Amino acid sequence: MRVAAAVCAAILMLGAGSALAQQPDYTKANADRQAMLDRLGIPASSLRPGADGFNRQAPNAANYDEAKAGDAELPGLLFVATGDRVTSPRMWWRVRRPEIVEAFDREIYGRVPATAPVIRWKLVKEERASEAGMPVIKRWYEGTADNRAWPQAKAVIQLRYTVPAGARGKVPLILSFGFPEGFRFPGPPRPPEPGPAAPEQLLAGGFGYGVVVANSIQADNGGGLDDGVIGISLRGKLRSPEDWGVLRAWAWGAARAFDALAKDPRIDARRIGIEGLSRYGKAALVTMAYDQRFAIGFIGSSGAGGAALYRRNFGERMGNLCAGGEYHWFAGNFLKYCAKLSEADLPVDSHQLIALVAPRPIFIGAGTVETGDGWVDPKGSFLAARAAAPVWELLGKPGLGTREFPPVLTPVIEGTIGFRQHQGGHNNHDNWPTFIRFARSKLGVR
Ligand code: GCU
Image: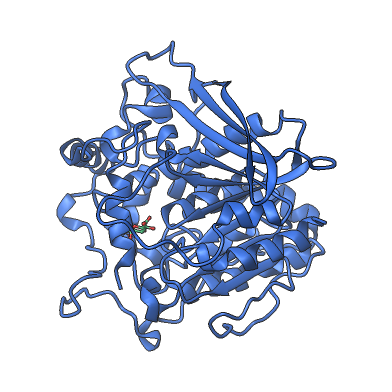
């Protein structure tokens, strides 16, 4: 069940800006988390443990039984804080949407402070090549964060992209959260996935593709919060409970990458999408929710803290997200819900995060429980998408094409929210063809 865990350990070993850096400094992460708990008045002993994804006999063994997942009662989507029903698009945009954004800012992902650094982009390399049987232009950029206010911290965001050289008119582009060039997960090499890789599929489908290196924006480690863009913004202080966590920083970094992409006359800035898997799937969803310039999202196996409902008991739970290896993804306030409060006390749930994407198209995917992706609660993501759909309808777009959890391999792409479960476990590979089909139709790519 825990294929995700191996990937997770490997990603954690990546340091900011370098391919395979040293092991993460858990001592520092633990001290940072402890300081936040102290500030919130939470004894560490009162934190709920997460689900145990390894030991089936553990009292807190992860639940993979649908009958025990619980019937989550979700916070209302289309009611404003005063209790009135949202009856018009205007009320959504003016009142309800800002209320939801505020709750995610304050309690879940944190706020981007005014001290977030300015990023200066520089083209460092350009090459002409041939890919997917066509001439392409490849570019590599570095985005240096202005750290003059706090030189002890630094960040150089790595961005690279490829566009067809001979395209008539501007091309749409899908940007992925990813790894430094040439990066390989430690351990024995994995056999290549069958069929063409995503970049080749995207080029053949009329898209350019790009990668922003998540860890070059912000290290994936609580011990690194004094460095990267968060560290620059903090200027030597610890985070306050509402300050940004790493997912918000990654999403912000992707938005800065958008700024650079939008300046290239070959790229259609109205058709730039964002993709990610697992923790990067969470980041892609946060990107879509917060930056309305992104035209489409491919959210793969994002699980808890992403598209899956917090209130369902299936696979990963909030207690895992609050542990030393993951708490840094979130605002400090998030820790409250792992101690005195619980999932049921969250002012929002993931259907409301998905709803922030409306009316733009979004595709949510996952593997199956049987092939090792149960940890991300595929059905919980479907239920969240279904619960979010009324906002698309309010805004005049079809929501999700079905109310029934579709059988495995069945694409649901008729509406503006796409969904598909594949059989490849914890990856996005098997869903790329469906996503590309969805994206071509929603973005009108010919
Ligand atoms: C762990 C973690 C997940 C995360 C995943 C990954 O499994 O519990 O929340 O999505 O790692 O990013 O690989």
